[in-house]
Image 1 (cartoon, rainbow, N blue to C red):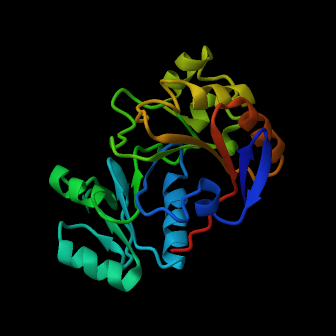
Image 2 (image 1 turned 30 degrees about the horizontal axis):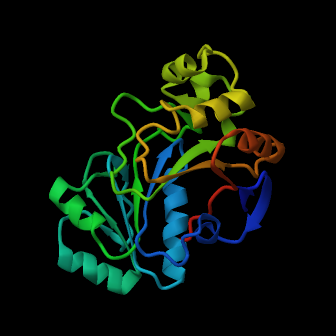
Length: 246
């Protein structure tokens, strides 16, 4: 389920690429930031590119999980990256890290990745899988060349205590004038998404910033997501839980 706010109403789309207007572009650098669900969102985008025969690279400026899949490459090798792309249509690039994760490529390798002549998808921070987040002092890490920033918020957070459902709850509470023990309201998600130290933090001037309200297909959440989306400026996507198609 993917719906996009257009002129105050919501239009249904069958794919993320079409909803974001990226289907015909090869020069995009899409960075996902914010709450848990970023990896699933990027994997869904990567799967759509792959299904359309468009090569795509996925990487991170911080950390993400490294899976035992043939499209993960945790070493700097142009030859192996090209071989994986030719065979799989997608490649995930990074360096080995602890706890089953991969970390960002070194600076020189990252610059090569960002210069590739096809779409590159980037995970720009972590949220410990919680549905809400306020970025820390050095977060998010968004490349200056990013063309699109997807700022993710999970509707699962609605009604939960901020300290239970939000990564860096103290920071979020400070931005919102709330307390960590307070329940998360619709207006809290909307304000955090639009805040210059929240969902709009570190977004490059020329990049499109799209708020993604994920898990909107949870029981009782769709109407709330629609109301939140109408109060958030700019582009807003409502999405269901993303199916892992890679």
